[in-house]
Image (cartoon, helix red, strand yellow):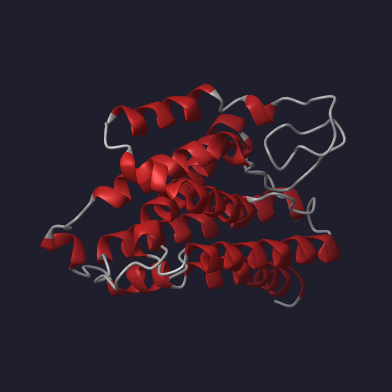
Length: 239
């Protein structure tokens, strides 16, 4: 979900990234449509209810969003403002899901993750800029993989769910804490800082509808559940 790094000069848009983000936002809308179909409205879809299928689909969406957000840090004029935009959107999602109660309210979801990771990047940018060895992103990816299971357990300490150590009492409809996702974000940010010139083909907009969706992905993310629920209500109770 794109929000237009600190004091970087304007760069030409990389259409292939917008297109990839647009394709991913479409996948997200389809995923949440199926989620509501099964878990909110009670219809049967065994293939979707399969936890492996569901997890693979979910990861194919969230990992791409987080990696793209990290990659795009070098395009942002102000990463602190960018983090603030993500945080405000995360708060709006928390309030909306708490009020509607269609599912478990979303605490520390993907928008929180992007806000927190962007702040971590802003604090460590100079270190990443000096870390030229390829072992750096490889190490970050290794940490992401090694620590992936950390937030899937529960811990006796309260108040550290934001970091990746949820207690037994913590619940969220969407959960992406700093650990392990900050390492995926920083690996992508490291790569983005080192791409001096993007190939010409990456700037060609081969699918304008998808790239448009990619450029407006944050708005679509905030609005899509309202639209999905409205469509279900019309189809089930009006038509």
